[in-house]
Image (cartoon, rainbow, N blue to C red; front, side, top):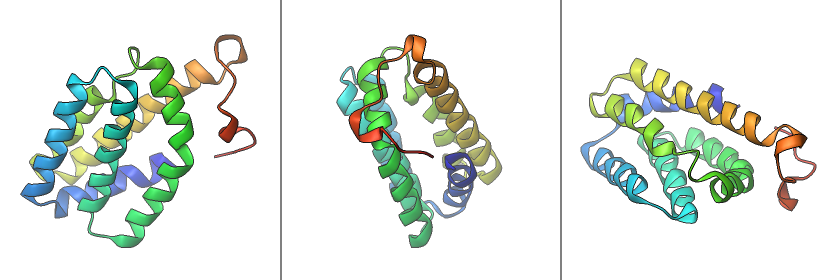
Length: 145
């Protein structure tokens, strides 16, 4: 679901973003690079995606993205806590930021698509096989997406 919505949100954001939001996203990415705290990185990642949603200037899309983020939040929090050294979203956020800075909708769409794909593959390879993963957090049991 994220791969259907977020790349299009990034493309729309690239067309509508203002300089203040670009500076805010840049600060988030910079802070993520320096962060050694998994909880902080988790929250910064959420801020990064929420700020892109804000840049779309589309309240319906922003709301949908927030609902999706809320649904994935327990998994992402768990992932950051267990895999912070192995998964660094800040590196994937750079091409998205660069595309937003030059207001290139196609590059923003592709960069977000790539980011969501890397995240999805990381989760699948590290959390989907019972042989190498811990039990899902209690608030994820029974959920489907």
